[in-house]
Amino acid sequence: MPQPALVCACCGSRDIQGAGPGLPDRKRCGNCGLVFLHPLPGPEAALAVTGHYETQDPHSAVARSKEAFFLHALQRLDSLCPHKERLLLDAGCGHGYFLEKAVRAGWKPFGLEPAPAAARGARERLPGAQIVEGVLGPDMFPGTRFDAVTLWDMLFLSLDPLSNLVCCQKALRPGGALGLRVRNSSFQQALKRVFSAADRIAPRRFGNNPSVFHVFSFTPRSLRFLLARAGFTEIRVENSPLTSGDPYMAARGSILARTAKHGADALARAAFVLSAGRAFMGPSLVVFAKKPLGQGE
Ligand SMILES: [Zn+2]
Image (cartoon, rainbow, N blue to C red):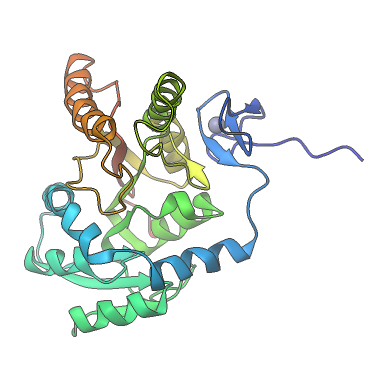
């Protein structure tokens, strides 16, 4: 029986190829560069992710490593939503570390979190906040329209990123802002190639390959397609500020991994400036976008 043609979840292209050496279970879109698991995992994958965040994730160390990013994100959101009485929904809020900083910056906090223990942690951290245990859906907070919705390091785990972003768009007031952070697929593929080459020269000398691939691995081009399809405008993709430390122990003492991280950050900043904002070489991307004014829904 013929298989239905694969379609890119970001740009809709049918130009889908193998993702290349070392990624046998993934496909790549020839138009926008999106890399994705094929076949997509079933609902049990979501349970495994929830279980990870319940029992294994070093959440306080991860939050500390993201301090510079959190402050950068709040500055950007502040410039996009400068008025008072601002409502912010952090989808995938974990234990509420980002929302805690958002409160100090003058935002009224709302959180959505599928992992029960993390949602409990967020409620304890933020007693006055509305923290709902669950996933992005059409009526997460009925009757409430947010000035900003943030999705930090969660969209790449979703099985349907377009539907998730449409829900965010509908939850925003007209003119409201979206903040999104994901891994940079182009950087992760280059990192994988460098480590594979180094491992061939000196087997096991440089530790585990620290490149990371989730259900979806986005490129700047794929993100622009996806956000435009979800109804966003003023889409701005940037290299994310570097996180500090190594909370997931990805480098495992590898000098090459630590050097690569900081060398890549310096290169990413230089390339972004020299290319007038067109080259994205950082390990992660951060995106800000707006819901158009004049859209009630
Ligand atoms: Zn595509």
